[in-house]
Length: 267
Image 1 (spheres, one colour):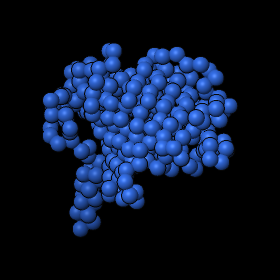
Image 2 (cartoon, rainbow, N blue to C red):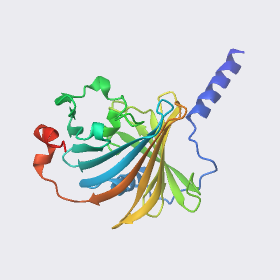
Image 3 (tube, rainbow, N blue to C red):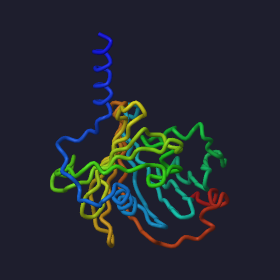
């Protein structure tokens, strides 16, 4: 009986750890690595300096109607710094966030206060959404803090029946400052566009999924303009981010990334 129980427990762990793709995967081309595919996906969404305007819609059972947040962001990848300004709704206009590695600062115009967000608040919701402060600060690196296993190719991946996608599993290094036990990503084979990401905890339970859609060409990139985050442990919760405009490899003024600019951002 103990041996049978051990077998059942092992089977349960395998099932919990299994990625949620629908069918059998095709083999990937020889010589291609998971890290190469992961880099292509990151390069699709980010450049050395990226500027974007977007609108975030939060749906939750506790809200009488969806909450819409308009924001603008400036991301300096090489400098490990970023700035985000909230443009709407009116009660939140001027709220700003500044990442200066390794710190995250927030300015709240209603109380005219600038505060540093401590590590204990990194997993709290960002602006009432299903994203966290940790998502915002991106302290971990999808390339440097994970090993990347190329599992194969899925034809007609979820939500994209006309495309083929590499399936890549991200497994964190033992000492990496990451939240997730692993991530499974679907990345379009031709252009490196991310199509979906599934996030698992250390026990192998899938806790949330990010789906990408409305793919449009931007220069040499094919960029998803709709990002949908769904927490699987919270019924009725969903956060949609729709890109209004995005610029890659642009130029920033260094004064943008200062605590002084937090208070200037109010309109």
